[in-house]
Length: 371
Image 1 (cartoon, rainbow, N blue to C red):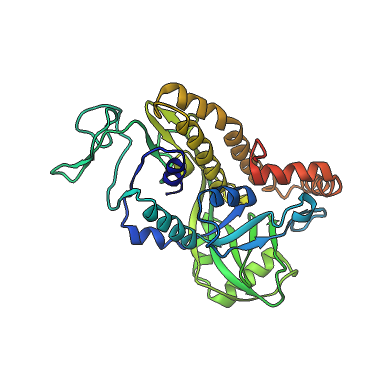
Image 2 (cartoon, rainbow, N blue to C red):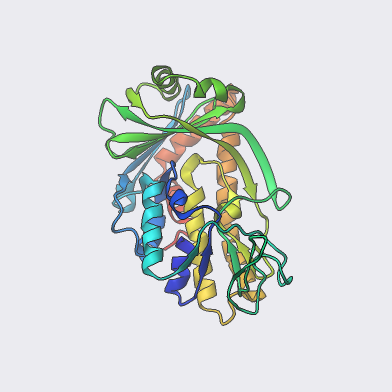
């Protein structure tokens, strides 16, 4: 929906094909951490002003059982916030309303696949342009200048896959003291724990190994809060928790996000570990770049247009993929010398304002520190 709106702003006609029913798309239980760069893109799309998001003014990064910590502050970058937190369902509803207001065709309950380009009778057969039609088997055939796969995941065999052997357990928790708009990224031997301010509460991302997932899911609220307290420490006291949901964690990415009149972006191009909250923010930067390239082209699916897009996204994609993967590997070991080295790195980052500003801007704006 965000891509369709972005292309519409550049004068490019689009249609959305969605496998699920439209109402089901809105029922997304996840919580999003949006960088300030993502906020600017959503504001450009015309959907930000109606959203109620909680600002992140400070990010506290530390490791359990080791010295050293880093504080990233919005004030140091002359920003009102480093990022914003809101339920995914709220953003989806705003995008959906904007899509309807823009008159963009939305075909719900219509599943499509990555068919070879220009093979007659296959889903989403590409140019010349024409109107979609339903076949007796329920498939849709359509002809477009460019097909963008903007959701789902990287198909098996289409790219690189790494299974982290972990799940993210998500919920909201209440705390005894105000959070003061501080987000926490706490690295532990069992995996990272993230706390994101959401209203008066925190949205929690608790990483746990696959082997103990069933045990963690079976805990009652009091036992779960005890585990969270043990993993996080005593800087906050947790008083209540909502029901938990869990998602498997892995790294999947397509080395080349473009094909013949086809492009993959968002989770269809790369699925990252949620540490540092880069995935959806990277997807919005994909959209920003693709809309600019396509909007300026006479033929949106021309090979040179897609090649320029892929080249322009290369540094940002590789940087985000490498950064999140490095964090997981770098903080996974409890080897004492390595733990001390990590602590020294966090301390050095905290004591060197130019380096700290560089890291913060990279997380907010991507490889090119947009805008």
